[in-house]
Image (spheres, rainbow, N blue to C red):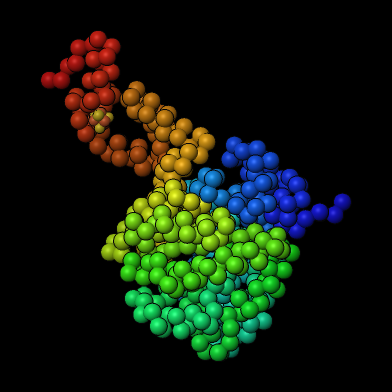
Length: 437
Ligand code: SF4
């Protein structure tokens, strides 16, 4: 029997329960009816290109568990595709839900196809980066048709979501020139679209031919991730006219995608002071009618290169608690270099902490269970149980073992030894004598 739907959104609108929706409902402890309604309204997306064999589907929506994305891909200076594939599998094992392939060197298609064959996480790409590499021609010589063909190529390769910088237009050129931003445009894709418009004098092809691109996305069920070309690149530029004006347009583009049953996420900031994070989430939810918000940070201070996984985790937790559904990880190498394996690991752990903290705060069913088990294990001074509940058991065990208490049989740790409050309370409450000296 022919498939009755093109996209997961269309299926939900027709009341069809897809295998992907069923799997997500189970993972999220939701009924299929609840999820069908959220999908039909665009508040949840399940990026799942049928061409991505072996995908482990996940739902993205503010009321579901917060998902995380890992950016990988080779660059001209660090161009080892095998090493990049090792990082991909590390990232999957560490719990990422999505991989964005941002490769910007060499023949990108074999790696992209390998990802869509072997990687169970959702795969995202940014076709505008790939256009220059694919055609091996300078930006100014590319045509609108070339960009659209690259979107089709990625869709045919099995990519689950694509970032499209549709929200900037020729008006943005005057806006950027007239608003004296400290950091102008820091989005890689956004800067390419801006440069192409400046060189050719033409309108943004991702905006001008949006309907044609939506048809491609509908045909392959590729979720559109509306890129935020004008996301602030420093605190001084946060929530300015360029950012908000683009967000208004992203709201309009969200509606146009939904009219064709195309799934949509909206990308967000960026560098944002902590006190502006919640407002940013609320504005997006209003302007984009609850479409899932995918945030790139937000980084809550500009002065911590080397530690931006922490600045992003602080902002990410606040964002997800206030409505963001999907966090793009940030590594300690952000603003400095292509992340290595250890940077990737640090970035993922930081993002997972942010996502989990937010899930507890927003009351996702079952989100706190593991924390409650950890509390019990700590009270019982049961170290094996504590490692079992730890987000990164290897690191927790290594730290304890490297500074073990003098007495091998001590239930406590080397922080307080016999002054261990937990041990003292356990003994006091069970009427035992507390021996300290
Ligand atoms: S020794 Fe101190 S830090 Fe270690 S488990 Fe006991 S109370 Fe906690």
